[in-house]
Length: 133
Image 1 (cartoon, helix red, strand yellow):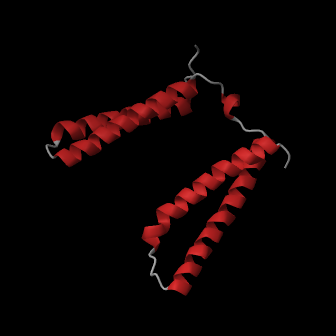
Image 2 (tube, rainbow, N blue to C red):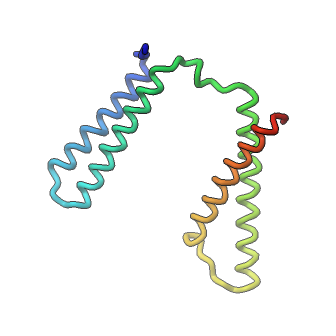
Image 3 (cartoon, rainbow, N blue to C red):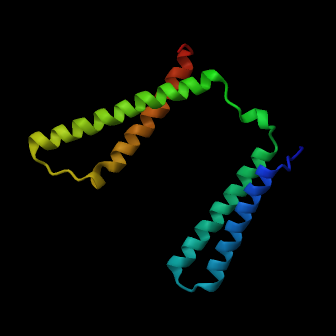
């Protein structure tokens, strides 16, 4: 297994090492449990970054370059997912306008986010299986 040692990979590993060290310092010097939990989260994030960097460093740079088909699929799925999000917001506003429910944005933002992400994933899968753009 050959590991790349170019500038991008070394910066990625340096960032993960700084995250791990800052998390260790936070856990060591703060006695408040909530702050220690943030430090543990930073340590976990740094370890995950290091593992992702190790995975990426074993692949060549050309491995991650997307071809035109996959770029077009992402564009088309993103475009239609945005339309679905706008339609969802319109439906929710119409329900609020006619039934006077007083819906706040912070109450429906997670629902809109979930609808958008699931629609993007499903559309991306659909366009990939259909294989004609």
